[in-house]
Length: 328
Image 1 (cartoon, rainbow, N blue to C red):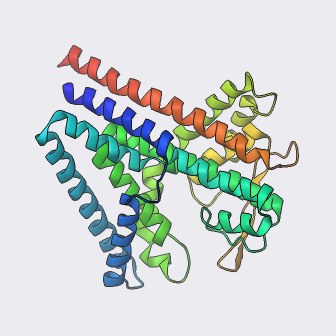
Image 2: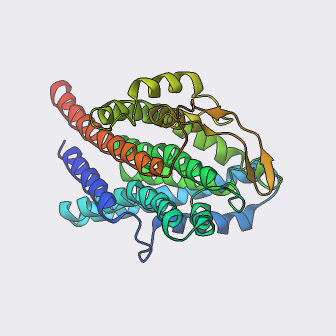
């Protein structure tokens, strides 16, 4: 059971490192390496059919999980301290709380200091939609939406996979998520080739997206205490129940609905992707006009939700330890 103690410590180290450092662009990042691996295999295997996409998924997941397993096993064989440090670093690379806040904060800062064109440019780095013609309201809404959706994809889901399947599971999830973001599109090139990558991402996020929404709702109740009326846990729960399926993806609207309710905003709706308009239903009820400060308010929900999840995940590891001591 000692290994579970090491695992809990490594997870906490990774979480704290993420809150402090985020995603230093000067350092190599495993996700960027995974992206290069995906591009390389795609260039070798691409054909407009599902079977070729299945080969991509298998090769990428095998390579990532095998290499991560080798690194972790080697580290723990060297020493316990080395193993904990390496596992902590891998956990750090799997999480994106600070980077999500920093990237969306850059949009907020640009609106105040550099103007709308710079804000569009900063936004284009974190969203998939076309940003060239967005007005300020649309820019703010898109920023809040990406924080809402990526609270699940970039923080809660990785934490859950790291907790219950270790660093190998965390990197497995990041590889699957990166594949979906690169080839999981329903367009002429990827509708067939990206089919399995998109479906795998839907499966992996099914439970985490719903846990994320519940944690966001709890966080909204906590923020109600001193949030000057800008957060509403009851409304977050109501909108989650009514609008959580207002998206083609079974998962994307789960956390977004909770955010929309918590902040009293109407999110989503149609947008342009690759110069084509995509009509999508709205999420939430507009109780007031969206404003720049809503980006910062979304950050508070993000951080409270992230800390809450980390505490619960660490507690889950110790509960598993106690159960093993009782029954084994």
